[in-house]
Image (cartoon, rainbow, N blue to C red; front, top):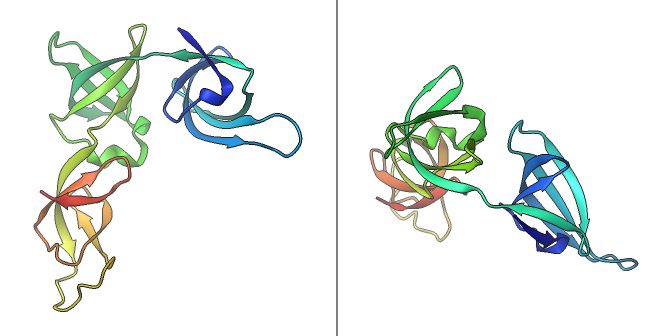
Length: 187
């Protein structure tokens, strides 16, 4: 494992801290007028989901953990657990559904997700960056309503509500960015 300085922590880094594995959710680099600079880091525990706010000075050393990433196929959900299968060994693993949070509706049957492992223990799952969804409900197109940056609400086939441009109508397939949960383009 590599040791990094406290000011090198970035969002998405996995750190070994206080005997647990933590992912950096939010980082804020602060340079106060008096005293040394520090990084204010909000972290989430990968095993139990608890949150922690910690200050790291630039002189502090932290262990950065590299997780092994494997493509896994999503099979089904049972009792709040998501079941994934390794497409090479056909080995199945379970991860808690709340791990994906508000992105859970974008996980579709048969979808390939990246599951992150630490020493054979599955810790996290990442969805593909872009997912194709169908619009099931939106307002009809109004002629002449082409002003820049005007968006209208739409409900997708998975129940998620997104804002789409006025020219996108009902029953249209669109590409949604799973990181920002926003409309990206027409499919």
